[in-house]
Image 1 (cartoon, rainbow, N blue to C red):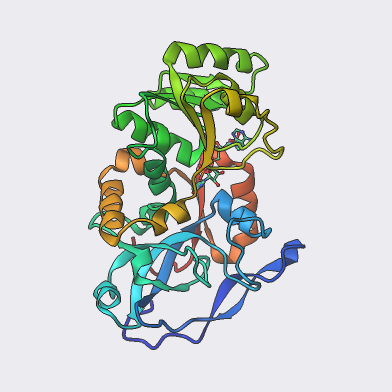
Image 2: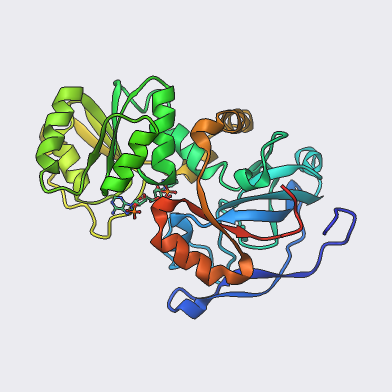
Length: 342
Ligand SMILES: NC(=O)c1ccc[n+]([C@@H]2O[C@H](COP(=O)([O-])OP(=O)(O)OC[C@H]3O[C@@H](n4cnc5c(N)ncnc54)[C@H](OP(=O)(O)O)[C@@H]3O)[C@@H](O)[C@H]2O)c1
């Protein structure tokens, strides 16, 4: 068990991406532990999830591509063991935190990560480190997508209502009093959402769905759609959303990019825009970030993430295979320090 009185090790066994071209480009190798600069902290990591964005970053296809070699991993949880100085950083030493590794040279798939203190959120008593590992990216995205001003009218269509984030968007929207309509691509996903109490969930993978979408948009007066496919569905939404309408694309799960006609964008009052949490987060004050993080911790019935497996970092390749193939079963968490208690 590492304590904050011990000197930091110089090296750790971390996940390291050294090439985007071959599976061997990702290995667990000895990697330097970075000493914290002013305003930074070192977090002894307990858990980190494998998110879809992590998987694309391994292939160099994310919105920010770190210079090779780099430690991947966008978020996680652990205990702050060192500060590089500064009030905010010093105050965190000894605290259990959720960590974001946005724009950081090192990601969270490592026993230690060095990040700005402002990228750590203290965990409330009773919030386990396991839950802290997925406390920020998806919950804050759900909040950002449904911020006042983003959704002008009462009905919102969510194209990928399955998966961790889709369920949170559905739950948070309902909590805000919005009428949430979900789409999935398999019957089992529809049943799972119905069991969570969502009445209007449709299978978008059926051949009749484009025609059904037209009726749905009229019946429920849907002006806003939140889309994580980035595929053909975007074109159908532009054709059928009520005016003024907006499709917010926040994911690119569909392999084939959206082929859509400019006709509805020009002649109908419908727009397409994008949402990226890193940009949204950068535009929020510290107080605002903390306020959201407190809400996320309090609303555990909405912002909890199912975990399908917890896998030691040494078995990273198996963990990645699991995360790729069973996405609707919940997140795969990497166990980074087995001695850190929840
Ligand atoms: N823009 C941002 O700031 C931001 C932030 C967070 C997340 N995201 C994005 O949000 C998306 C969901 O994240 P997550 O954490 O919820 O992922 P997740 O837990 O892995 O769930 C993904 C879900 O999407 C479904 N899916 C996969 N490909 C699909 C497709 N082509 N059409 C319809 N459904 C599909 C999966 O169903 P199956 O089981 O059938 O595969 C699964 O239910 C990802 O694209 C992620 O990158 C974006």
